[in-house]
Image (cartoon, rainbow, N blue to C red):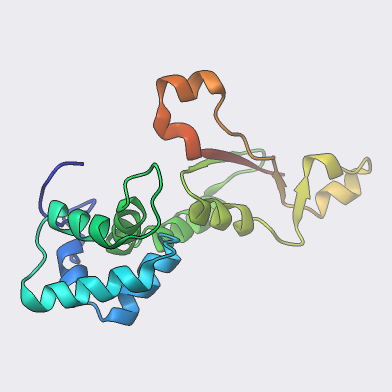
Length: 187
């Protein structure tokens, strides 16, 4: 939305910047990032243009990249045309999905009996990881709670259904539109 450096790092410990990705990654890696993390349907076209543009001059600002994407996208939507690409780049820079998996693994080990883990995800890739993390033969849905205590003892986790924001919250906080909350209870 505003012009600034292509950085996107969430902390000083992160070495890789967005500018480094844009100006150094191979075409196929840019396509993979845009497609996998951004679910961008025009990932090949965007990556091709970035590679061509950076051969002329480095891409160093958010406005440069945003304008480039806006000028080449053929599919027009209500969203800013560069939203998915910037999401993908942010996720790559900060290794967000890998960090989510590490966090879930640690939380699972730290959870005590009857302890609850609450995770709010903001896009489908995160939500899929959270949903599948506890999807094992040891998983138990609320609707499948057995009546016999021996059956419960074989299970380790109770996974609640997904909770999404109510309309009243969406009015005051539009960013919550894609949020999903999942609650896991250790039995």
